[in-house]
Image 1 (cartoon, rainbow, N blue to C red):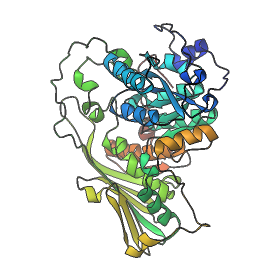
Image 2: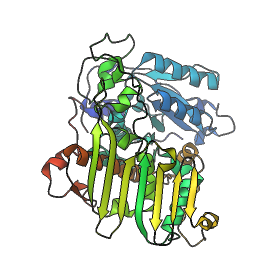
Image 3: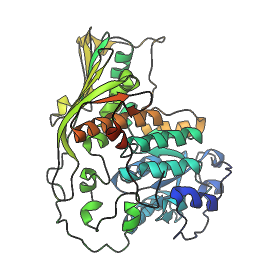
Image 4: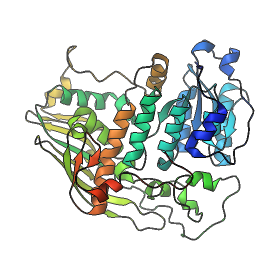
Length: 438
């Protein structure tokens, strides 16, 4: 389903992140779809895809798209040579050929005019830069959550997606699971009454035995482009913990912590079932502690409270108890609680409700990846559009700022900025290492 685009490889490489130096030329690859090797799907309808970031989640997403007959995966990009090769081998084995191209620099993959869509599954500090460049290049995106490590990054991503008319699916896959959708439909249609309280619980850092490598400088492994891995993050001496999972997940330079990276899943459900939590202005307080364990330094635990002028209240905390995780909507007629283990309600009869045809229905996606491909074909918004990903991300980023500053903050949801607090507003963006910029 390749489309004609008014963009050249040269112009893209000039404007992506403002960097032109150090790029090498590469052979142009003719997609297998154009050669009629698309199985039961006609070549004209084939979605040609590439994957940027070939770690665990990137591999998971690649496998999901490989199993979709409407897709042809033709390229993979990663800063680590071993991961690039493993991803290429996976794709080539699936198609029985050697056609998958590999790239170290995402800009070269985006410059391929035959690619319609990309998976973005890098560390969080890269999401916004790659997504905005992909939008400029005319690519649709399946992008892992969150939308970045700062509120300004999510705004830039959202604006680029809309400006260039791209299809964007956020990797908040709970929207494609029936229990989460049903809980939100019960809340949205008033079955629990007027919502008074939304309770969100997410796991804190589960990796108590994190990598814990000595923080001393180590030799950069062969085949690993450390400078490209850091990208906009500060230049610091190489240490294996800076890019190995789980340490990068717990390190501020590359991730805003579980309060954002994991919590975004349940915050998204809170916003889906009760849009007022992001649509209305609020005050937020947050208490928590921060890690100081080797390279890891971001938030370790938190207790946040959001207060709205309408009387609505949302609490958001870390919890190690699986049953307390998830999202609960509590109204004046009852409550419904949902997480990855199940769904519960009071009264229990709520679980037998059938949503009426004239009531709010929140879609019917049962596969996040298939939903994305269907939307690429039809040009409609997926079940987790970019706005939803942005809002769910800042519902974690905003209390983190309140915790870091140690004071109550007021948030203007319309302007997406703090009210009367210059220092807090300065923290809505992070400085990027030159020459990278949005």
